[in-house]
Image (cartoon, rainbow, N blue to C red):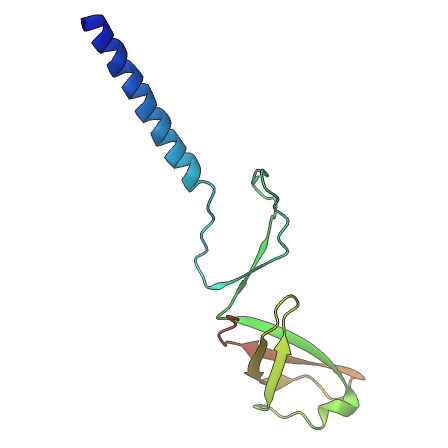
Length: 123
C-alpha cells in the first residue's frame, strides 16, 4: 500500500510539474505591447519561433506617429499650418484626421509636409 501511495504521489507531482510548465509555455505565446497601436508587417506564421534580433512584426504607436506627405510645389500654396488633413493607413478603412503642423521649403519642386497624427485610429 505504501508503495502504491508513493507511486501515486510521484505521478501527481509529475502531473503538477507538467501543468505548471504548460502554463509558462502558454504565457510565452503572448506578446504584450507597452503602447496602444497596430501591428503591421506581420511576418510570423503559426509555429514560428521568435529569435533575438529577428523582426517578426512592426508596431505603430497609435498615440504618436508621423505622416510624411509629398506634394508638388504648386499644391503647397493652398496648404497652411493647422489645416485639417485626412489620410488612410494601408489595410485600414478608417480615415484618420489630423492637422498640418509644418511645411518644408517652398523652393523645392517636391516638398514635404510632416504631420503628427495623434488621434484614435480604432476602426
